Length: 257
Image (cartoon, rainbow, N blue to C red; front, top):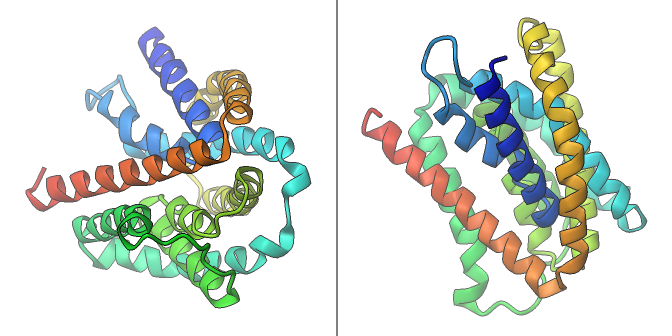
């Protein structure tokens, strides 16, 4: 790794770690959106495959720190059916990736994200959406499909728990538990496929790991400082920003960019 690559990695891994610690998600969203911009197509930079593998290798550090902080609010019952649905969606996502246009997938994801965040505002929904096993399973399948197609399996999980309107600790605990399962599945899949987890990418992870630890601890302090309403506003903002980014990428791809 070159010194500029290390500097870029430190800056944006810090930003991604703080973002996810405060809002409950966004580690992959930040790195996948930003790091590929630093790529000259040659010896310097981060292509998308390198970034996706890096996220999978180091995001578990952030997840485990966050989950430990809210461990008293963790409930396997609340996440079981969603996690069960994830592996059923992965083959669908892989099929869509190979057969369907990427711009359409990203556009659909972006539209769903934006709608899910702003719908309670326009419909003045005050009551929380009820917990239903079928909806949890559906969210898991969607997460698996989007993860298989675009490596963005987090949004359906976040939307499902965001609409429950639980406490910030319970919401974050549920999201972190699901992410623990999905990241573990991805690590196994990458290992079985071969050629993805290389020595160079393990070096990336080794450089990023202490940065993720430090920035995650800072983010956890910020998480404890914000109130319940502030947490929900931050989550809503992150969902909208994620949706806007996916819509932007969809437009670029549709235009051939």
